[in-house]
Image (cartoon, rainbow, N blue to C red; front, side):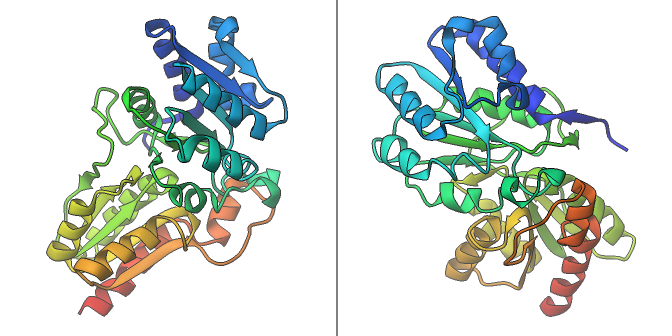
Length: 313
C-alpha cells in the first residue's frame, strides 16, 4: 500500500514557502483556515492574511481588488462554497477582467463524507470550467499539489485548484516537475486508456493492475489539468488504444468525461465509458461508503474498462 499524505497540508506548506520568496503573495480565507490549512500562512505572515469570515462573495471581491493592485492573492474555502456560493463574483470580478487570482478549494467531491450532501461539491468543476480564461487543476496526490501550487503562482491569469479532504496515496515522486496543460502517462498500454484526475487516479492504477492479469492492457493518464485539457494526449490515446474510460469524483456531465467526449467526437470518435456520479446528490456516510455506493472505486473502473473493451471489439 503506497504511503498517503494530505493534499491540504501540502497546500499550506507550499503557501508558506512561496510567501517567504514573494512578499506580494497574500492569502484570504472564509473562516475555514484550519481546514484549508491556510492557517500555516496566517501564522507565518499575519499581516498578509485576511480572514473574511463566512462571506465568500466578499472574499472573492477583495481578492480581485488585491490582484488589480498588484498583489498575488490566493483565496480558499471549501469547494462547495468556492465557486458555488460566489459564482457571480468569480465570473464578474475575476474571469471577465482575467485577473491574476488563484482560487484553491478544498473538500471537493463526495469524499467529504459525513458532512453530507450540503457540503459535497459535485458541480464545482462544471461551474468553473464554464468560465473563459480559467485554468483548472485537480492534483492526484500531495506531491503534485505542491508542484501545482507553485505552477499556479508562476502562471499569469486566474487559476482554480481543487483538493480533497482525505489523504491520498502518493503516486508521484516529490521532485517531478508540473506542467500546466500536460497529461502524464502513469502506465502505458494498448487496449484501453483510463483518463483520471484527483482522487480517482490511484484507483485507476489499481484497476489497471487487476485488468493486466485478465489480459487487458490499460494505459493510465493523469489529467490533472482539466482546463486547458491536453488534447494531444487524449487524441493519441483514442488513436492508439481505440477506447477510453474517464474517472472523476464529480457529476458525469460538465467535467472530465464531458470534455473528453466532446474532443473525441470532434476529431476521433471511439467507444467511451464514464465513471462518475450519476444525476444525483450523495447523502451522509463515510468517504469509503459513499465512493462505493456511487460507483467510484477501482472495481467500477475495471468494469467500465471491460465494457468499453467489448464495445471496441
